Length: 323
Image 1 (cartoon, rainbow, N blue to C red):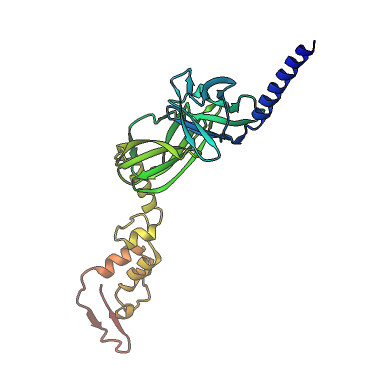
Image 2 (image 1 turned 180 degrees about the vertical axis):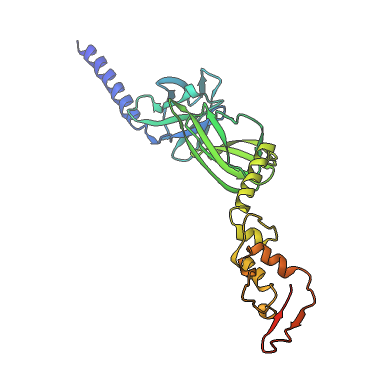
């Protein structure tokens, strides 16, 4: 009976010693959150005090790497390790090769016989594709146009911008999620080109300072010549404008025969011969002539005047001027 109690006490002492020694194992510094691109490497560090017996790494709640003081226990070739010793600590580095989107999730390092846990999160981002409908755009010089760039399959969604190597009179762009498809980003570039060049669509993941770009050629052509119909319409409009003001036609030297200004009539009247050369007869009839006949007479050739004298009545002299 006494011996059995001694055995029980010995076991309790051993357990107490193991518990005491195990409680001295501590995680000094756990891993930090990491964001990486698909296909790259992800590195995590866990620093612990000396005396540890077993260190384990878990990803998405599954053990992927274990370490003992004698060496690692590797169960997956994508999960490798490195280690660093100092006077008062030990650092374990886990390296994940060729990370995949499925690797995203919580990550932990822990020690056997220790309640301490170091936690972090792995985020794997994917650079998707960029697409512009044509790699050689043909536009009209001086006319506004737009070019659309599509970013598909990116996680997280990228910021899109444009680089222009082409002379323009105006340019602006707007980026937004495609309606009904929150995994596709559109960026529409509005520009008025003045010459040939290149346009580059740039998608960037801000967290990683990583970007992808796509460049297309821009060819500028002259506007099409004016059609015969448009030319005739333009000429017709010019003719109507020119004939709208009769006075303008006179000033330009093209006489409008259906129009006679007061100035022209005044000039015609001023050119008539003076009336002082005529002597009125009591039976004067020329005044009753139409205006056109009067003009004809005055503009006709002149004849010599004849003078007759009445001998019987010298007081009465009649001068007649024949025209």
